Amino acid sequence: MKKKIKKLFLYRKLPLLLSHLGTKKAKALNEKLIDLQKAIYKLDLYLEANWKLEKKELSKHWKKIFKVLKEIGFNAEESYDLTSHIRRYQKHETRLREGLIPTQINEEYYYYYKSCDVRLMREIIYSMKPKNTFELELSDWRYFDLITEINDDVEDVFEDQESINGNMFLIQILEDGLENTKSFFTEFIDRVLAKQMKAYNEPTRAQSQLCEWTIKEAELTKDLLQQNCKKINSDFKSLKSPLIDRKVLQKTFSLK
Image 1: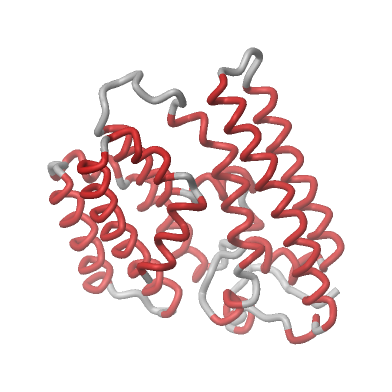
Image 2: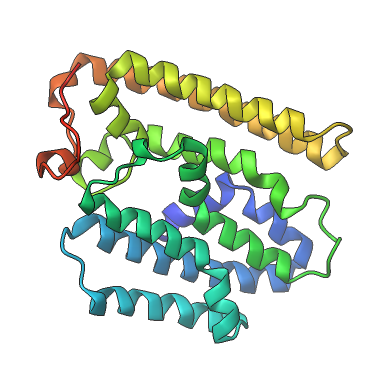
């Protein structure tokens, strides 16, 4: 799990932000952020593996999350505020069991909350430095996070067939068919890029760099989209989701 977390942090540019804190402070905080991400992943694994959720088990996972936040230096009230988006996303995950699936939610809204764990890590890093010491605002990362979160769904489309997972890419294929989904996600990626470019009239050097990163990840995501769609197309009838197998969805699905 630690290897997976380090890969995630590198992909989302967290080491770059940590480098602004100084070597000793960055190293110590990085270890705590790994612990925090591990606790969040374990909560997520519990949600993905269990159809019936127990409040006692959920509470155990949240206690571990709050324990790490306390070790970092946040009090109970601060920790509760910091994790508001984690709780919101957990609500989306639990409501999968009621038939509320990602494709019934605005896609940008959904992926914004799906990136809540990474945004939490960034917010913690930003809180460790005086204001205005980072060249980028937290809000500047919005579109980069959307693109990289879409990438995660496209990459995980095969493994997510075995878990109770709100993979919008997977579910949309089962709803709308492969070609329609491919077109939808390609257009969505282009729309996110257009919004990022529109956000900056006169971008700073750091903002221009972030735009370049976003464009690069968007192109890589499109390439991955094409590759995985080809793999799916060759064995389309075997595509599945526990959500659909359990027949709890509010609409009828058919392979198209």
